[in-house]
Length: 378
Image 1: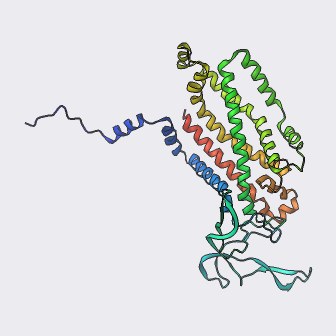
Image 2 (image 1 turned 90 degrees about the horizontal axis):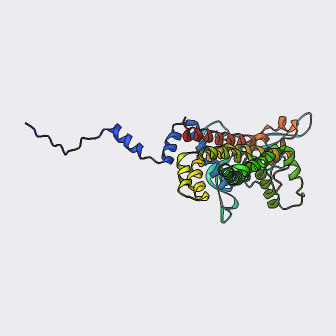
Image 3 (image 1 turned 180 degrees about the horizontal axis):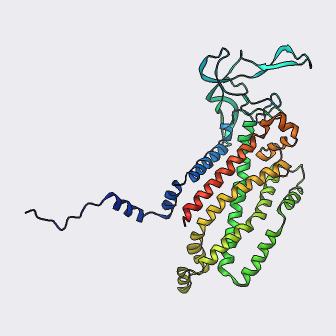
């Protein structure tokens, strides 16, 4: 007979191993595992990362100098893999428009046509306009462009002949900087005020909430226009930009405060918070050690959903001329060229910054929805 060794442990199955490993998962790992199941959340995360990388290295990704001028309102140049005879070629190229020797019989103006004799070859990591990478390192390499340094306009040019694609890429830096800075300030103020108000309660909470309601009662759009118009036109661009950020932050923290206060009121009645009060823990320790970590999940989701609203607000104010002043570039400022229907009808590529705004809004909203389901799946 075979002897049975009672000390030997039976082999664990794969299912038991997975259960044991999941039992020791941290909260962040659990949220990440839930987020990966949402394809919209992952798509939003990928787009957000790409947008941030594009904004940080905007000079590298911009194919041209955003201030260089060329032909005004030039149409977009389409990339082609065929030569002038229609033969397939491996290296992509664009064909610029040029004036031909023929004249229009009505206007007697030179007929503009595609110049197939002088193609502009395209490539990656090409030399172009000089810039400073991250504002420090001199460089002249660009991610994509013409190999000989000639101008290419994948999204056309504006009324001054400036490349729309390059300006939109550079403008992402200002638009996203404004959005992220405003949301950061709003999060700090709103979270602090909400936790303190909800934790202490009483008369302090009543008067503080009346002040929050007063801030929420202001009609924001007229107040934005009134406050931003106080800055003189001759003010430095940095001062104007800082004032716009301050105005958006001052009017945006109240809603975040209300949401955090509601979460804090629920958490302040939980048993472990009351136990901490019973053993004599200080208010600061209870807020920072017990309430703040449990509020952060809601704050992170609220941040990802608040950024698109700030991007849309900056674009709207920039379109009206109340957000960013030249020589700075933002998506809203670029949309000022679309103020008339005749321009939109004749030169529709001027609306290209709208595509960047839509992608940004979708990316952060999709990421926020995915995080909301991952943080609280019930």
